[in-house]
Length: 138
Image (cartoon, rainbow, N blue to C red; front, side, top):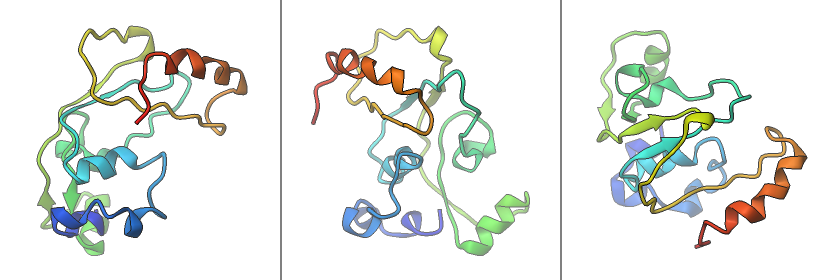
């Protein structure tokens, strides 16, 4: 919000600059900041807590993603529900679907499979080869 979104769009995807800050917790926001996403379908781990950043959603409530670029004062103002000038990014449709309700017949362009030792049991690792049968690595 205070760094990548303040850059011209053609400079945002520079991984040499952003690689140290890019991680499994923010790569979707980074992709949205680069305008690489047409939509997002999010299927959370049923045992995890809600870890979505409401700052990244339109009107700060779950619905479409709409990233906001601002300086540090703006970020502080947003955190305290104060008005502050911000630069709004284009909206990205966002669906949050509980894992036990997920069914989709759409063709997806990309899928991300994350192995998260801090969030998933080691026993789930044996599912990785099964899931990879449905994903073509790029």
